[in-house]
Image 1 (cartoon, rainbow, N blue to C red):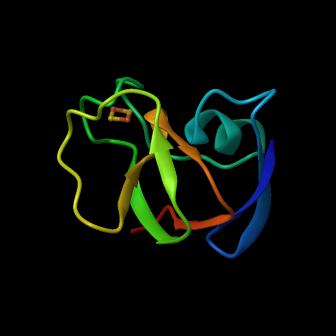
Image 2: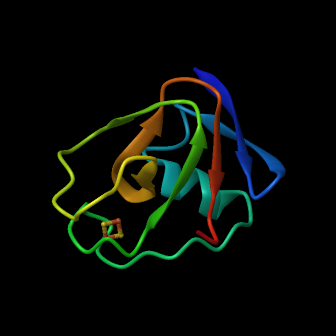
Amino acid sequence: MKVKITVNGKIATFDQSKHNSLLEALEQQGFEPHFHCRDGFCGACRCKLVSGSIDYTLEPIAFIHQGEVLTCCAVPNSEIEIDLDH
Ligand code: FES
């Protein structure tokens, strides 16, 4: 499955055969998202989910508000738009 991801207005792709998480997809396409634990724990990778929906590959422990996503443990299940500067 490949889905379009819009990141701060730029177009990228999430490819399920290449990327285990949204964070990996961002890194491999030249973005520099914040991260620390890569395990849903610290919240450093938190960013704004502008539109679309995601699934978590593991239950996130870090606190997230409505409309936010932890990129280290999320995969998009539709076309999504995120804002890394949020
Ligand atoms: S990098 Fe720590 S929660 Fe994502």
